[in-house]
Length: 291
Figure (tube, rainbow, N blue to C red):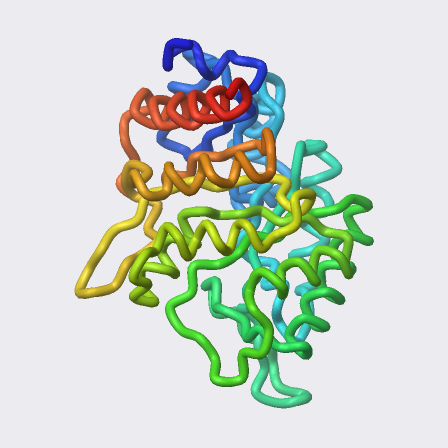
């Protein structure tokens, strides 16, 4: 199969992260995509240009809502206002999937102190207590939305001394106990392995994938990373790296035809370059499905 035909192949369910500079190109060309994904918080308003664009996109493609603000690992719980805005958006758009991250961002300094939001995806400790908190928060979100959600593994630049559960087991227990699914970001796995100084980062990431049950993963994310001052950064600002492509193929061979998203959030390329990345992902999916 030619790469340019791959997006139209039945085996391919590949989408792109839709960002404002690409709106016009998407609607002018209407490429063959499995879905588009947007950041939920950008569309919380009831009126205006943003919701209108999302409705237009929904008229052509299934839409996946990917959040960055629920802070599902926060001990102070989920922000009720945020959850209500998300629920209203879900009712309006009827998305294909809803997802957010295995992180925390909300905290208070004391019992009666105001809650502050860090506006970042802060890593959680892999402990029984943190697992209980996240299970309860995910269940609250799912109960309000009336549907299951996906939770994404994080690129984390610190770890905690009291970590007691391996990350694959933590994510598995989260999904089993709450009923949610996993959004597996394979770029995040690679970033973490590289920053940990793994002798064979790809082997470490493959072992992580193999430790997850076959039925857990509902979507895969792909993105580019960069290196700066000895640190590998999940910046979503370049093409997917060869090692991440290899890990993506390994994940598809383990989990089957899982929908895959190409994320590109900084230093946005020409729309055709983003589509080229999506075609590459679709070609891999086709190769795995037919081999």
